[in-house]
Length: 228
Ligand code: CA
Image (cartoon, rainbow, N blue to C red; front, side, top):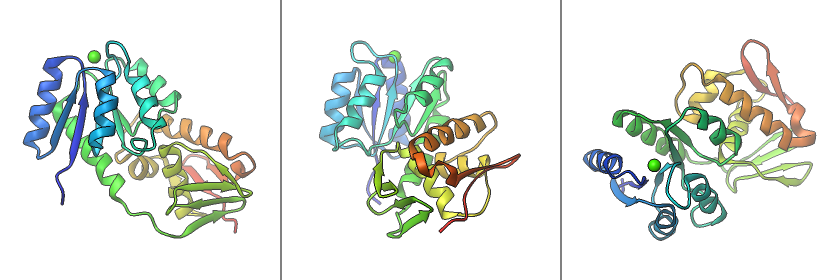
């Protein structure tokens, strides 16, 4: 397998050095940026497999960097793991639909960061099946990464897309929050259940007429309606 590349975006030199040192030791190739502008240009030039992005940066902050990456078709598909100093910021990360693949709250252990990176990369390697999944008016085409409701395209974040894909692949069967966390986010632990709920709420809002095809299964989780 080709060597996987990580772009570390962090203005604090100590933390950047620590991450770079350990990621290299884990076999990754590493690029480093100490500010947002450099991060955006390095990302589009080097096309790393994954980006570790600190939120608090001088000048262009992490949230702006993330938006800029998503606007550029050349970098939009690169998964981003956000580094945040405050757990309050987690709500903003989840809430702003930045399409962050994951986040890590500082202070973090390097081991935790490496595990998250591996989980996200593993998830991204799963090949898309070239079959459209259908549930009532909702059609998901994994091969071209497209959702349509009654024929009209719907824009979803990467996470919402994966969530819907998992539910549709198990149509008619209840999926627990833990199962969804496992396949969509790549890991699960307690306290993350509300993350699933938040994303399902948002997904339903975007599905419009298709919303009722994502059913709540009381005490368990969610299910795609058993509809043709
Ligand atoms: Ca910082």
